[in-house]
Image (tube, rainbow, N blue to C red; front, side, top):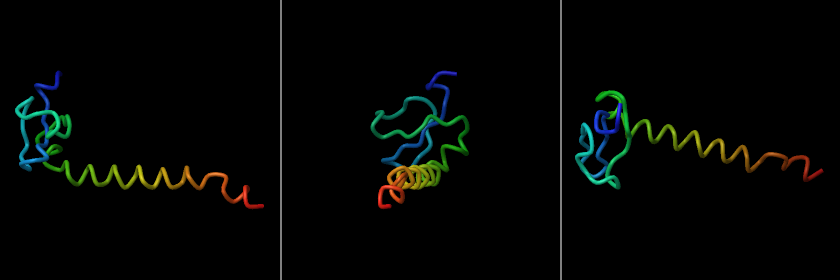
Length: 68
């Protein structure tokens, strides 16, 4: 299924769109369902939090042994 058949969340308007209705810079996605696209802000926040936690763990990796 191509991107034109997927759902996107428009970051500028807060609306769910099907296909390439708006410029790429304004779209988050693609999502398989309209419901998933509607949850985009929540999903993006969760993913950002997860990535930040992973980065913090990677930054701390080996730091306790380096101080010994």
